[in-house]
Image 1: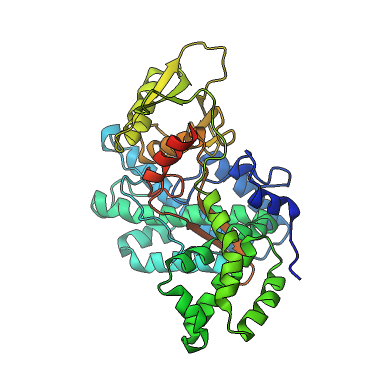
Image 2 (image 1 turned 135 degrees about the horizontal axis):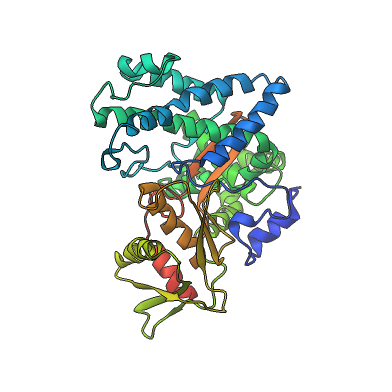
Length: 423
């Protein structure tokens, strides 16, 4: 008999509410929201994570010392870049954020991190990078104000080091919330994606015994994942699968449980909550989105250049309808130091951006497009959880081309279709 692990989560899946996807666990003790991999942490966030790590060191946490050493090494990327920029005019500064797309992190090659995996990546970096760089990083001296390589070669190496640093911060942060991240495995839709893309699936499942061991393992785990998406106990899913295997009826198991995987997948891309003041003009040729006029006119122009320009690529005339001193609760933007960029709920009315970085950096330009997507009602579609089998954090983006999933992503036709249907 299959047992539901959580009736609350099950009801959320089968009878979706208008609550935010990012906040569906508000009733539980949950960690602060993290942006997709590739968006850098603010200094205040780093300070808090290091303070927590210091407590772990005092409590003789065996991994804390290793993590602390990795953080100190990774921190040298920004310190060295800052030392170089201090001697240059601002127009010639080096920038750790990259204007190039990341390529995304697909479910086929998820990012896996724990202390030993990250250490191995650092070790490999020190071997692969130029000895002129590694020698400085290994020393305790001051940083040269002139890069030992060309600016292009140097900043590429520093970006790799900084990505490792950001991964270490993310892991140090996640260790404080492992029980929560273990429960997040419920939202792992890799099984659904694997089976959806699998060629000749029905024939393969009906002739399961003729497949290679690797294929059998892949399909078996994918089927179990479908069951897990229904919030059933993993051990019960294995028990339930056994008679289907004996009867050579794995396709029957797939037909029974695929609805849970599809429901979970669809939740990532469906607008469940809308803002009442956003509307299409007659004929649905222009989407009007009222917004409180920022006090800083540079921010106003930045919103227009980034958000409106993104939608124009689909032939959509997206109009941020700026309002002055309105008594209505129109969306607005604020900047604070030491925060992760966020919106106060899906279809919320307050965008909070990190004040530490200039607004025209690639990170900030991507982030405002992503966060405005939340104002319109779109949800995040990247997944991060702790896998108890692999003893590692697993991270991937459901669609690496999607603005709401990936630092690599842009708007998709599905976003347009949702807005046409929901507004």
